Amino acid sequence: MSMPFSEAVWLCLAVTAGVGGIAVCKYKSPGQLGSQAVCLAALWGGICLLRLSLFWILLLFSLSCFLLYMRSPSQELLPVDQKAILVTGGDSGFGHGLAKHLDKLGFTVFAGVLDEKGSGAEELRRSCSKRLSVLQMDVTNPQQIKDAHSKVVEKVQDKGLWAVINNAGIIGFPMDGELIPMADYKSCMAVNFFGAVEVTKTFLPLLRKSKGRLVNISSMGGVFPMQQTAAYSSSKAALTMFSSVMRQELSKWGVKVSVIQPGGFRTNIAGTIESQNHKEKVILDHLPPELQEDYGRDYIFQQKDFFRRIELCSSDITPVIRDVEHAVSAQSPSAFYAPGKLTSLFLNIAFFFPTSFLDYFEKKQ
Image (tube, rainbow, N blue to C red; front, side):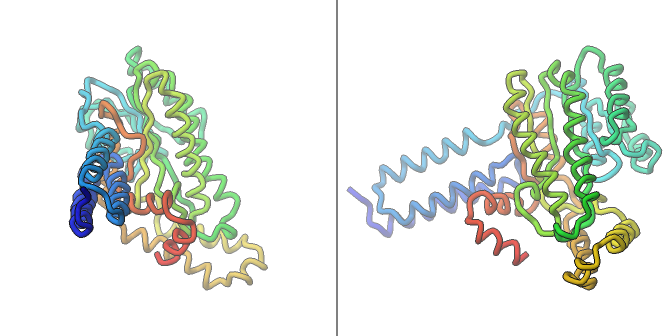
């Protein structure tokens, strides 16, 4: 016998609220549990429109809970046990914070930096334990990558390297894709994609030996299209797909691959005001006259508002650090992590909503 329609609706709404509430766990738990919970909540919202018997409602609810449980990342963490980890881009931002945090946890950390004599490198030497080694490592310089590899091999010897965290990245100057110089496209790809690929290829033999982890710091922008970031987002999209392919190929070696797709965080990736002004001047000086006329200099000057929006983002990178820690330490890490406020919402919109809605949503941001 079917339940009265009103009772079925209220029951489904209660289940929707319960499953949707799990999304809150996203901000306290790693992985994409929140994203999956949102999808299940939306599914239950649709079920509310159907006249189902109590049997089918309970069966579907049980199946939903089972799928959510099976897809949720493991919380069981492996012991540190003298494991060694390489982090690129350790001068500042995520890389700097990760190097410090992993050192505190007891890992042997190799922090690759762009400038081994810079303030970020000196801060790591001063505040971290003797287990941490600072390595000169411009990821666009193959020789520096090889030199760093030699130093890592010398220290870890036959134990292998447990994890590589490809974090080094640049954003370039935010502008409409037509206005971004080809040099910026090439530099973003050189650092954000080709650099990560070369580091990965160089250190993979050590990861295979330890059956370790490859963690690539991508971006929400690699999935969710954001205006003014054609160069940056394209390079991050390439890194995300590279990571997905490597996840499949390296599984036979026992190496697990995770992608971190952070939302908006305030780091030093945007550079100083002086460097922003200099980059803007260089672009304007070399911009073809017809583009300056079509777009107008006032419009081009307004592009720096993107940096002001970055300044409004949270400077607390704890969500990113927590997810990376889970990716390198969990028995069964997630393939994708989306740290940051509303990041899962944006990614779900990109995946599941019509393109027209996605474009309208972006215009309203």
